Picture 1: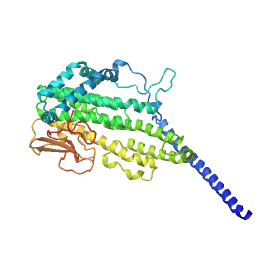
Picture 2: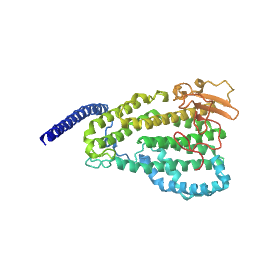
Picture 3: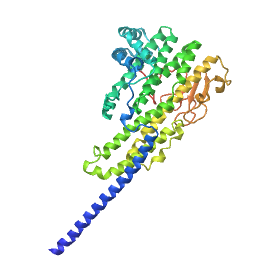
Picture 4: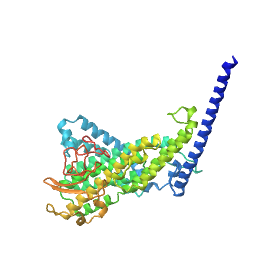
Length: 448
């Protein structure tokens, strides 16, 4: 019997020793990872970068200067108008729906939009006031009088989602009004609506994380396509064109992209922190403490990824190198496709803004013969004529139907200005029957 128990005893002692060695290894790994992570966080703090949600809390601004004040007042009217117009569209005949999609309002759709807007006359006026405000703070992140933080990450995300949905509804309502102005033969008033849309989109970007930024881009995309159509429908006074170019020049995609990444970084850090503290739903709680070092090393890779994207925000789409982080942690690798799509959406937005500035400048200069156009002669800053996907000049072609201005898109190939749903090229061309209606990267077609 002793001979039987002796091997078991040594095996048990060996197992205990192995467990002890693993625990020591995990503790050392956690210490090293913690030191590495703290060093990176210290560098961010030293640079004045936010590292926790409380760092995003802003000093209160005067309500009359806050676009959110007027946007909140307009919300009920916005949602009611959007609901009524959508219901009319859904109940309309296929002919009426196709006419609406093609920028031609049938009498039935005109009456629906007009009656909805008349029922809530303050909605458009409040959105215009919001667009004219100097700042925008939806006050989702606040501190009380004692400095205590009043919102956690989950609450912030939950509170942000309905705001984002209402932002898109506001863009649609302004777009309805622009369509009605076009139907009434008032293109300059329609253009004024799109300027309000562009100004609001810039404000929506100010305090957005990644999803909020993408929605702001989608909102601006609605405006850009509507402006493209307005410019091609008839003459626009020169002062209105100057106002349009000024507004487009104020869209700072690079800074907005960086700001959204910094805020998104805090969200990612919070997720890693919850895992390292044993609150993850992905790993059994009794094992998480042994994996803290792994989570923290993964978080370091994540911080490196975001920092690199912030530093290279002004670069082209071709400069995004996913291969650099293929050996990073599992969670960092899992966010790579999202970061890449985020970067691509930024480039799409930049391309469309620049294409519209070029189109507007061409029309301001008057008739130009085929082959006689030089981008340098349009009076635009050099960077406004550069393709954000490949760093070269944007493509401009004169067709029988009008000017085609486009980027090569994410495949980095000139496909001749192919602007269909495949989005092979990215830009603005002559009027199409079913124009994109607000998706940041793959435009939605049809419907209000």
